[in-house]
Amino acid sequence: MHAITIEQPGGPEALVWADVPDPVPGEGEVLVEVAASAVNRADVLQRQGFYDPPPGASRHPGLECSGRIAAIGAGVSGWSVGDEVCALLAGGGYAQRVAVPAGQLLPVPAGVDLVTAAALPEVVTTVWSNVFMVAGLRPGETLLVHGGASGIGTMAIQLGKAVGATVAVTAGGPEKLARCKELGADVLIDYREQDFVAAVREATGGAGADVILDIMGAKYLSRNVDALAVNGRLAVIGLQGGVKAELNLGALLAKRAAITATSLRARPLEEKAAIVAAVREHVWPLVAAGRVRPVVHATFPMRDAAEAHRVLEAGSHVGKLLLTV
Image 1 (tube, rainbow, N blue to C red):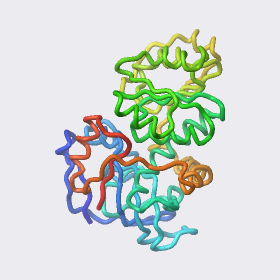
Image 2 (spheres, helix red, strand yellow; image 1 turned 120 degrees about the horizontal axis):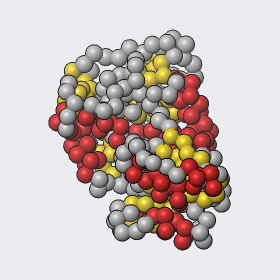
Image 3 (cartoon, helix red, strand yellow; image 1 turned 90 degrees about the horizontal axis):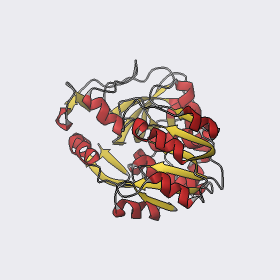
Image 4 (spheres, rainbow, N blue to C red; image 1 turned 45 degrees about the vertical axis):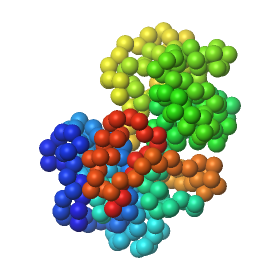
């Protein structure tokens, strides 16, 4: 088969479409004939040499895919050859075939075509696990989403609205904010022009955000705590703004607030399977009903993954970038 390989870390040109051995599904796994994958910032970090796959995972980039089951390993039940699926991966999505633990498979939801389904697994599992399973967002609360126009952001807006929350977003520029508004965002904050702490306080009558989904890390840490409501929860899922920052614990104590930081890729299989099962139970009905939809900015042939990485790094996109086989 062919897959995107990374012989040496570097720029987008490091991504090379090459002939590689076919994967073989092990016990508890299925082999998926890939229709599409999606580009995530973690793929960029892997390409640059900063984010190696966990032990035992495919060395090819790609944290999600859609396609059809081509073979089934020992010990797998509930799936058949030919089933259309999408999957959460620890790696290997940028390829013609990938072996996937059965617990990380999802059926392609009603109303979504096979290629577009590749835009769902990573963002839905990330948002659901952090905003709902960990931070416990409830109806009537306020959710602040940083990077509202990203793949994660566009999904977080829709899921927040679907459960009855007020959703505030930060994004760069009026065009991106307009797209966030179309998806249901209530409070639009241009981080280039506005102080998000002041904007959130004004929008909530001084109360602050009950839950914040953050991709920036160190750069936003103290300001995120300032923006939290009493009993607020800050969920950190990205470190685009650095890894080290000072924190005023007194401010955190005064608000009885909590900070969590999680990653998905290296979690044990049973934890990933539990998240995927929760997504199938709670989110897939919303997708089937049309209340939550994947947002796709552009689609590229997988052999042109380098161009898709350039678009992601330029930061002008809204939603997901897909790669098709």
